[in-house]
Length: 270
Image (cartoon, rainbow, N blue to C red):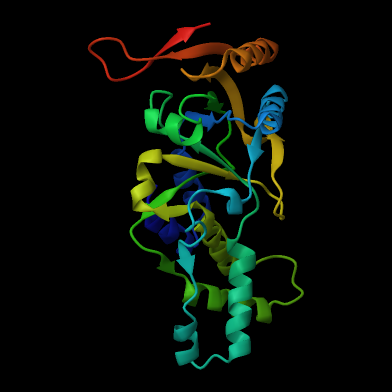
């Protein structure tokens, strides 16, 4: 998705078109790669989440990119040069932090099960598994935008703060407030361009806090289609995954190393 195009729709006040554009960029199928490592207590928690037909949402602090939620920023020097006091600048930062910082997030990929780097990064070198999900409702799914550099939202956030002062006590947000809040929410869905090979999509839990949470897949607009076992998954974990897949009544497959003449793995039904 082109975030600039999305922003233009919002700035023009065309919220319906903005959402239509955002939704049309969501694919019909997404993949969730999950690791199974040496911590069996953690493994049991992951498998239990799967058995409950749910997805795990992790706090941003647990992510592997130190630049998470740095895609948008407030330029304090710009506000200072415009005559804003230190207190006003602090208030502007506070409004930005409240609007742009998100709760726990579930990360998925639009690339298929054959993406071996994803198995390496997020499924512990193919020792884990992958869930193929069909997208039933894209309302809460956001495409990650990959940018060369962060973008300043100083003026937009300053205007939002001024509107908040003017409309204090009014329960209904103004169009300008809605526009800004929708755009600032994308702060959690902007990453540096070098991550673009992951083709990532995100679902942001509608809660605050620093704890992870399991949320049913259907509440996220998703349905589990297939469970794909990594090539290096242990026999014990394979048996557990097979049992869970049968319980969930979804297809279960094993990732098979590439055969002669190919560099891509294939699937073998279990």
